[in-house]
Length: 336
Image (cartoon, rainbow, N blue to C red):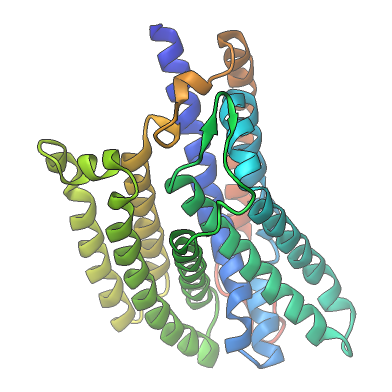
């Protein structure tokens, strides 16, 4: 039982790592797409798109890893969760497809460029909203009947999931704005600073709203966050959010290039920790734990060997890509 516990926990952390890596790495380029309507100049859009062009495609590797690992390591959870979120999941994937096509086609045309700008924006926004809705749908609880999904087609659509959808989309836009600050110069950078401040305030508002709503979804959430002695362990999370928020706005006032982006990532990490505190060890909140959903021990060990080889390789080539394309984008040529 000890080994099973260890393996299930290890796989839960691997999936959590993959999801967080995806949120961090694909979040900012989705955010850049959502920002497009606020930057109407073609030149600004060219520079913004070029800032993410070398890395955007590789960022989605983590989405595939997270989804594949859930299917392989926790097949029961996958079988319950997927029917509950089919609609937003399909819309999210279509949004990512539209965005990918827009990346390739936008440079091939002048006359129809506005069409691909719209596709880039709508694909990015749809993907971000749906990821937030999926998060909200899982958090609010999924109806389980025996070993299968027991709810309806539209159970994922509630005021809470719409709130989490808007929260994630706003957070991604903040990441995109902070990324633009980090990668650009001149007037574009100054405008990105203003957007970072605006979406920083909006993201903070959504963090507060979601944090206040979440404990009332499940009795276990409330107990973990507010009951004694659990509150001693959970209290540092909101306190750290307050501290990082303070330094975030201070870094904007000081016109730092890199610090706003780094502190935004730290804010996302704390939100992710808060999410883990709320639901662990459940993979379907209140219904199925990671041990109940786990694949056979032999399967988990076999896959763990593959992950131990592949994840360091993915991390290495990702780090190399970011290192090669470090620094500002040249506003004249549009390249690093």
